[in-house]
Length: 193
Image 1: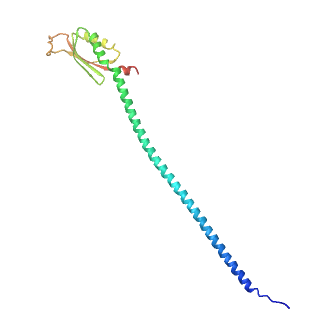
Image 2: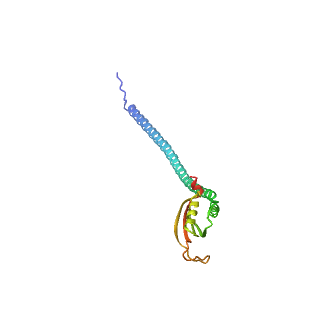
Image 3: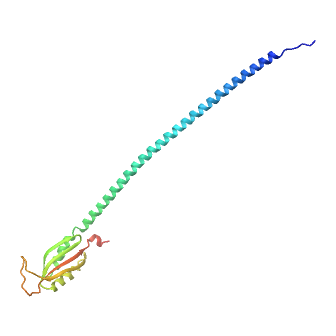
């Protein structure tokens, strides 16, 4: 006698168990995948936040360096101005005795026949206006002036017959001459160059 076994209920239960297991496993995989995606998104967001912080820190450092650069440029300009002023002061100190030396030299080397009416010093040019008994006195005076080391170029601006002034009277038909001398003066600081 053969017995017949009905396996359909067992198979149905097995299918139901397998479906349940598949559903549970799928749910676990989906939850795990969502958890992995959430962790990845969280880590990426943290990384992006750190990068953004680094970028803003770099931007602030760049701004502070630009401010420092502007300050350095200001200090550089100020330094150049101070150096220019120091050079001007040194130049003035080296040349301060020149005027006294010029007048001392002119007064000591002026011939007795030459008289000065005016002396002007402007922008490195000394202008002497005077009167001499004759042209020879002016010529001797020019030769003496050319020997002074700071007088670079002594030129006769003009010589003409002297006329009466409030200081002196000139007789007619005399060799008395009025003259103008222009002298280029080089300060000692420039001679040293």
